[in-house]
Length: 247
Image 1 (tube, rainbow, N blue to C red):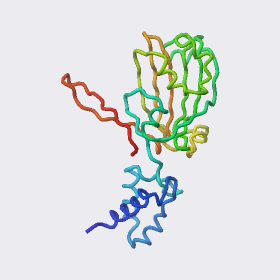
Image 2 (cartoon, rainbow, N blue to C red; image 1 turned 90 degrees about the vertical axis):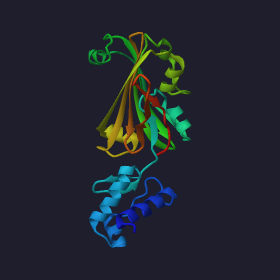
Image 3 (cartoon, one colour; image 1 turned 45 degrees about the horizontal axis):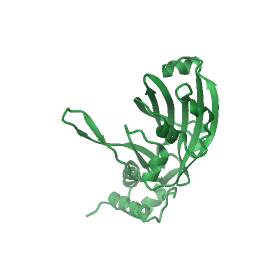
Image 4 (tube, helix red, strand yellow; image 1 turned 135 degrees about the vertical axis):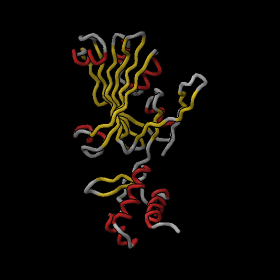
């Protein structure tokens, strides 16, 4: 016999999977559900918590629960641009340049990058949109000594990440992934709530010990995830099997 919380889970999941409740649709409140299913609040909460853990819904305190947008998987260690990831997953991608400016590297950022203060850089901010929904805010630094052709590149036809991958070789890369609560400006650009959880990918690439680019890419936590399948090699090193799919 199916438990009540499992029935609630399956009923809501079925409506979402069928498209009857599209992304952003408000789920009935706990009060409405406990009245419909004649059960306790604890039972309803158990079903909604399971749906949230599965990534099917988003629960917002004092506001309610909503159908989550489909998430794009990004492999943890693979270097790939967002436009290609979206295309591989069958999504429509567009972007717009928010800021493009030539500057000199300040002392604090130079120390962070391991470069020399005063070096010329191109600072580019870019908003990526997938299926008409903001999916990433890209804040990038390009070292002009390493990539002089970037000085006159507008990125009107190709986003910065793809342009660099296509044209500029690199010999080393570092990824750092962090979670944080979004600030008001970032929340407005990504069309989410201030304080909502976001994922920040920090990536720096080098060519012969010199930085090529440093970028922070911020994703709304409910629309993006990092994933990867791994297996041990004969040497005991973990090899990654890239996986991109809609979850």
